Length: 90
Image (tube, rainbow, N blue to C red):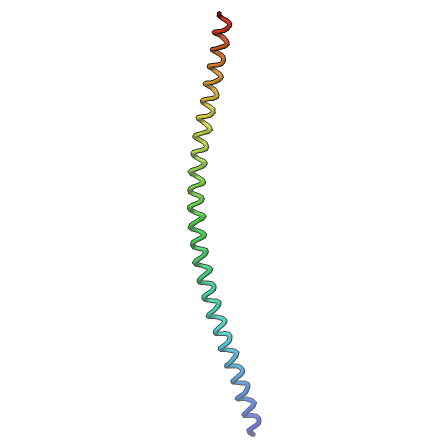
């Protein structure tokens, strides 16, 4: 083989090595990005679970308030009926 062919092969090997190093750097950046994304995802999941628990608590409170309101409305209707009956008696 002559020197030109060897130089061409060496040049190609350098290009391949350079490209491989660039791919390695990109892979490391990608791994860091995925790690940061996973951390954010875990935090977001934690917030979603907390919000779900708070929403459940609010729903239970709302149901209690609805029952109380219904009870008070019934009591008010009963009292209005009693007042009407008392007024009729007079």
